[in-house]
Image 1 (cartoon, rainbow, N blue to C red):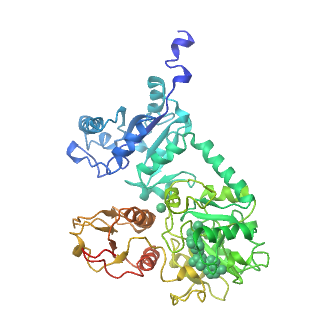
Image 2: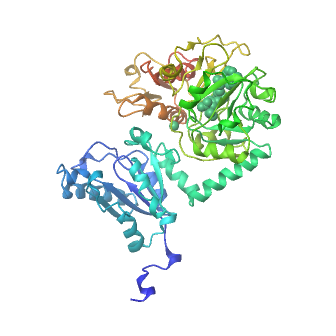
Amino acid sequence: MTMSSFLAFPMNNLKPAVFLDRDGTLIEDVGILTHPDQIRLFPDTIDALQRLSRNYVLFVVSNQPGISKGLVTSQQVASVNSALDDLLRKKNVTIRKWYICPHQRNENCHCIKPNPFFLQEAAYRYGIDLPRSFIIGDHPHDVYTGDTLGVFGLYLLTGHGARHLPELPADRLVFHSLLEAVHWISKHPQPAQQLDASVRRASAIIKKGGIIAFPTETVYGLGADVFNPQAVAKIFKAKNRPLYNPLIVHIAEIAQLAPLVADIPDVAWPLINRFWPGPLTLIFRKRQIVPNIVTASHPTVAVRMPLQPLAAKLIRLSETPIAAPSANFFGRTSPTSATHVMDQLQNVCDAVIDGGACRIGLESTVLSLTEARPRLLRPGAITQKEIEQVVGRLMLVDVPPAKAGSVESPGMLPYHYATKTPLCLVDSLAAFSRRPDVGVLLFAPSELLFDGPVELLSPSGDMIEAASNLYAAMQKLDLLGLSAIITNLTEETGVGIAINDRLRKASFKTVQPPTAHEKM
Ligand code: TXA
Ligand code: MG
């Protein structure tokens, strides 16, 4: 065989593809499916696939270990796939091939290792350009599968995504939904190079005194060079943020801490060792060199070391700590995706680094170390209990009265994080079930049927998952022109404390939803 007859496709005719997991990515993961009637598409699946299919060849890759366990037959799996294929075809979406791995992960099958056969086969048989292709799934395994062949993996928080998130390395991008991932792909057809270039461009802008929106593991930040007061002033202007509200300074190396702070109390070290990089902000007495605009003339400075690798890289390449509040208008909901940033700040920041969804989705825990005993100023994903395990009893600070300027930590103002649509904490969600103009935030599945749109924050009732979806869900409902968004508080434990804190503040100005006739 000559070389030219061996290559099925000339190199310049190769097409990029997207390899999609089935359960938890295209359809709800409700356990083993044996019959087409059990198929439940996610609401955005069709739209997302139609968009993708304009530029990508589509494959579905499904791990069905139930086959090797004898819980479902290959024929039953094939019948479900075939029904789904028909359904998609009617919507003008063609799946080129359905690949099934029937094995359990610990069987060491050859479907995946040493090289995923389906990727090799697709490349050879269908002329797929693997380095321009993507794999999307809700299990960490899906995301790594393409690594050896240069296929870029994207992780979804749908399906079992949130449950397996702790197993996913920090440098992998995550998304709230398939549609969000598809939007990202459309802007990053060459993902690795483009991400790298966007962080480099952003760091050059920071060095020149511009402001950049960037992802962190908590929420997106809007950052500037901490040592450039004119640049920091642009943040306050862009956000319409009162000058009395100080910013958090983000560092990438522990060596960047000492130049900012007057001293590092002993109690700081075990906290730094345990929680940095991560979603814990520590407040120290500041050095003179930190500009007053950053700290709102307080004698203290808030510092945190983000875990998100793109944030860390931005700080390193900028060669300076970056002062950054959350990238939203003052008082409004913090953004947990680049799209949320653009909705609010598109015209006022110099660039946005799009790193997908924020894994934690709630702002960092803020802990003051300026007095003898550490004081918790803002609850967050790192809980009071976790901190107390390291440093003993904390002092809790009650929510102070809403007197601007007199507040120690203005994030403690009672009104914050708000949607434009009134958010109401109600005693009974059922009382609003017949209101198509009222959106519902649900923490766990409910028997109730609502006429209005419902955002389920965690199908398994998990608080960490609910936290990561909360702001995205609030933002989604906020765009629907509803009369009100209703919810109730969740259990006051663990990260539930931070969730309830944000919900109380976001709903501070509203008590009850308007009646059907009086729009607020
Ligand atoms: O997770 C986060 O903390 C995100 C990301 C971008 O890092 N940032 C964030 O920033 O939430 P911001 O500005 O929205 O909230 C900062 C909080 C505010 O409540 C502010 O009042 C408080 O930290 N803070 C900042 N400096 C302080 C200081 N010197 N003393 C007391 N509170 C301070
Ligand atoms: Mg999030």
